[in-house]
Amino acid sequence: MRTIYLNGEYIAETEAKISVFDRGFLFSDSVYEVVSVLDGKLIDFDGHVRRLARSLSELGISGAPEAEAWLAICRELVSRNAVDEGMIYWQVTRGAPSDRDFVFPPADTAPTVLAFSQSRALADNPLAERGINIVILPDLRWGRADIKTTQLLYASLMKNEAIARGADDAWMERGGVVTEGTAQNAHIITKEGMLVTHPLDREILHGITRAAVLPMVAQAIEERPFTVAEAEQAAEAFVSSASGFVMPVVSINGKAIGDGKPGSVTVQLRKAYIDWARRTAI
Image 1 (cartoon, helix red, strand yellow):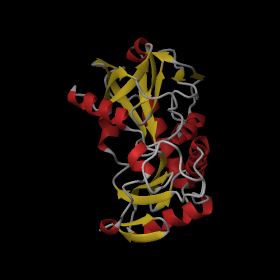
Image 2 (cartoon, rainbow, N blue to C red):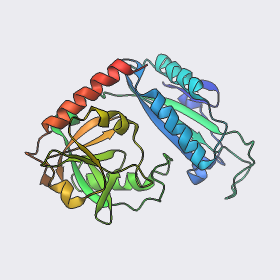
Image 3 (cartoon, helix red, strand yellow):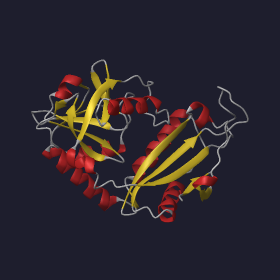
Image 4 (cartoon, rainbow, N blue to C red):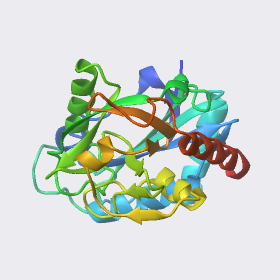
């Protein structure tokens, strides 16, 4: 049985209790982060803690742990749950006022702070060997995808729609332009060798793995919107995320990308990222 962290205590997951009036439960008024673990160490911790602070600031949620406290929490959960490879999930909500109300509770309302571990294989993921199949679906999310909130229903719907269509996941598009995946940043490599990825704006999450991966790319990079047609005609494609690292895409809308196998640039980039992650994890 896992030990989790909830509001200052390490307890068994079966003992955890959160108020039915918690705003994370009633309004998705909460933010989260996922930090991956390799060899029992945390990957890119500083990037994730900075993005959590930004998300909290954008929503005006105060009272969450500071960076050093998060580091201690993560390390304690890794130790107590014997996590060699997997993830630590953090979530902070605006708290639990005494009743449901659209108006924010008093500023001194304590946030709800939750963290838990998930053990799973990351580096030797079989999907990285075969690549994933993507379908393009409409992006109907709210206009602040750059804030990592727990408003994940639409992304979940689109992932399940992709699976129902025989694919592994979905990329979302708005006006014919690909924004991002359901839980990943999207990237293509053109036949001319240019890496193209959506710019950092309000339409996509500012990926921590994306930020780590792009400096490793030998190809020229264009941070600009790319169309569905460009994606379908790319030489290679891949997604980046904290739990998937660099994951090759081998088909989009049923059309093979390149020869329908993970591209050489993507394979090399995944290896470079994993090597970097092992060197720099704390």
